[in-house]
Amino acid sequence: MGKQISPERKGLFYAGLVIQVIGGCLFAVPFIAIPIIMMRMHRGSDSPGPGVMLVAFIGFALIAIGGAMRGIAAKGVAGSGLVLDPEKARRDLEPWTRMGGGMVKDALDEADIDLKNLGGGSRPEKVIMIKCRECGKLNEEDSKFCQECGKPI
Image (tube, rainbow, N blue to C red; front, side, top):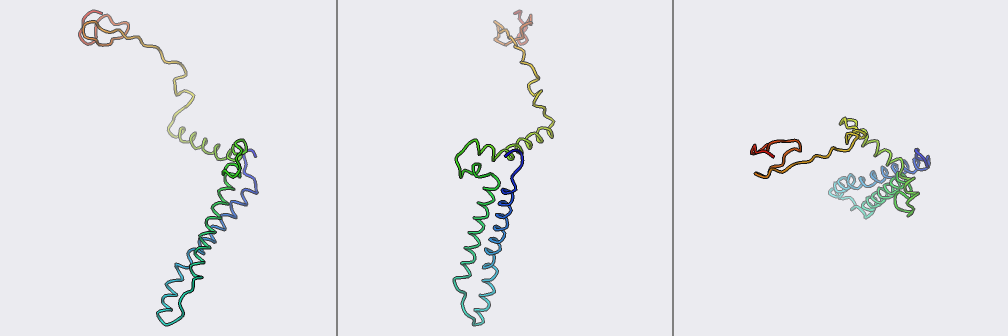
């Protein structure tokens, strides 16, 4: 797959988006229409049929179907878990993992953190401490007198 998302996956993603928008509109219709229908019923018109709420359920289903289409298009068939193939999933998710790594790199650059020199580039120097026999304070290796009680080490 490489670094680009295929045109087929992009098409499926945008088709899913269109289906979700249509589903959202259908889902909203009953909530807009019911007050109008209730006003007509108050005037003596017919009662609303079950079709008004059926439109909401169809809209909800279209929202779910569009979301599934977008998820599969964004992550690929293996990346979304429909096919259990770790290598194909890695290829399908490569643009997203590269993007995530780029975002982390941007954040580290913004914080002025250089990962190459994070540890100083060398191993830390070993520090040897000498314990005072009088008070028990740990002193540096080259100390001649205790830093706590002043007695000779």
